[in-house]
Image (tube, rainbow, N blue to C red; front, side, top):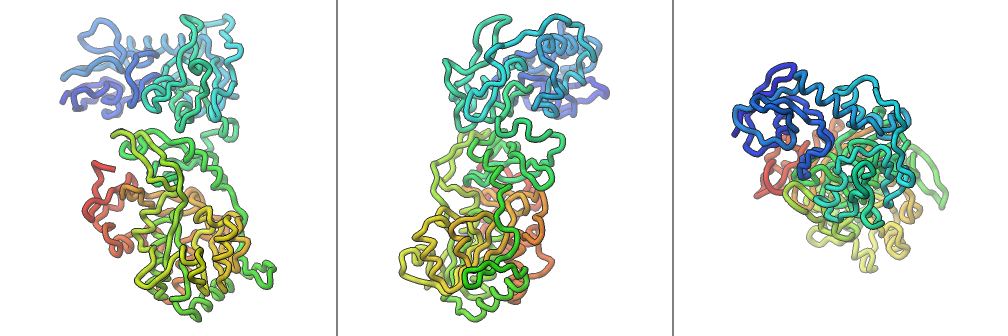
Length: 539
């Protein structure tokens, strides 16, 4: 361990492990050392020279990112010598930068902009013509990323990402000296599973993601912690929204799962959260849609469930629903109504991989976030019960089929499988988007998107992670847990004061392996191990 003193506006001393980068040590002390090229997961190159600081005992100013720390070191982060060096670096970086912040899509999350205001001169002494990169501006270099080399500061973050994290090596330097620029290697496209992360690590507007460009100013966006629904790795992300519209997913740091990264597959599912076909409960009578409101529809559902024995009902949960929602489904149908026919399925998918701090981790090859959690909640046929395959094969035709997620899998658009479900006397479906199953349903219950509810998912490794609500569903749309709770209350189960936060402790007490949790720790995710949660170590 080494003790380092940082002399900033206030002198602070911090003790850090040997080998800690000086920039990271400063963060622990609550001191900011401005930088561009440094990133905690990349090799240190000392490329930008923005992190120059004065250190007692050293005659020359030093780059903080490349200077080894030593016990007793005193670092001056705001001395006149340090400030002059930072201003000179900023002046040099801005010589050829276009200074078009008002029309740059990176404005609001640009480190050059931030450091210019915080550490640079407030006016430029440079009055010559700025360098242009004909043919290398506003050009697609891959399916997702647009490059503009007039804005590049040659920090090499994107190059190091493709070399050290994705290990695909698409980006490199072209030319030399004053003509140097970053571009794709030998004409290859920037096309890998994590290509948009190269734009994430760009500290300026040189690389941007095409799908988000000029859609919204970032300072208007609300950032809500969530979990990616694309597979069962459980990557942590942020839902960035304004009003009732989701504009993008961004990676959210969790070193044990996805670290700083998010794959393109999961990232670009964000737009699907804005899709909506159903805004009112629908009851179909003689093939015609009627809109009677929630109470008549729920009453009709309850009456049908009371008149039908449990053995003739199929309750289908979903790997896209939260732990709390699947648990409510099981408690309502399995325990309260005595339905033995419970099931959950998930679509197959290619095995997806994510680089974490501890190495590469893989999905189990399903295209859903919560298959393990749904099974943990008890969604499987009980003794003597039947499942979805019995319906598909024609071995069993239930009187009532209750589908808690109309988009539970690709089966919802498979004509033969939907026809098998349609043979039921009453087909009830929660739905947000339209498909063949929802068009065939007798009752359609409009439900919220992932952005409009909160709860927890359990990833394939048993890590339980909380996601939060970015916005309320627009009435009369309800979250799936609200629909299930409304039915439960009419059937004599549940409490009107329940919500996902209060349901989880009940689930934890009821489901093996989910006991012994700390509510605050769910924000970072907990892993089940021998029936208990552990917050450190393992996935």
